[in-house]
Image 1 (cartoon, rainbow, N blue to C red):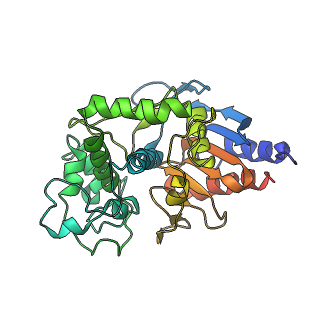
Image 2: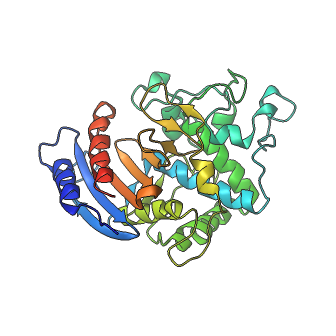
Length: 326
């Protein structure tokens, strides 16, 4: 079997970490091929008004941003596999029964097609439900905030990427698990993080005790790669433990919609790269990526700080790394 072209990976890495790189900053890059880390590199956190920066290392926990959505998908999969959640039943959300929102299923939510109003904007607080939910009026109970927004479309007909939708899913998962914040935190660690080997993972919760599954898991780059590896192996951990139901990876990468604002497609809380058939990716604000390419036995993690209009540069570098794998 032919190995990965390490010189090509190094060239892409050099471009990502160049001091004058046009995309901004790369903080961490991990490339795993056939379960082995074949390239690993770290940068430096910039100074901010909140404190000085410093070197990033293999032990530095970095923010997931929306890569957390795919972790939420894993949590749903476990409960669906145990018969505790039903993808096609009306989503069990307080206040939706007996209203037009009762037509929204868990599957609609996972495909980002519930029909609910939500503006996913990270800059303009005046028109951003996302900023309002994460840091303003909705921050104490994010799921309730999102669930209370108007229904604009028939469920299942319009794709609208929404962090609010994910936090509704997180509340559904938390209710099914039981035990409030402590119960959900225990579930994430015992059923996902620990079996996957993600010992650094730190999930965050809102004041209502709901896992902020849209945006806030902190972990090392290697641990995000371990999460990607879990999906590369269709839900089986490195030690052979089945963590997710067989076929749950295919659920994640089943096409649901094309993102009208970009080049990617969407499955179920995972992004799809059309030029890499069978691939699936966790993607987050400022250029966070965990790209899984099962056909090439590859997982690539990039963590950094890139403006949205420059992220295509990062994507092109990641494609170069994929091309280096046979």
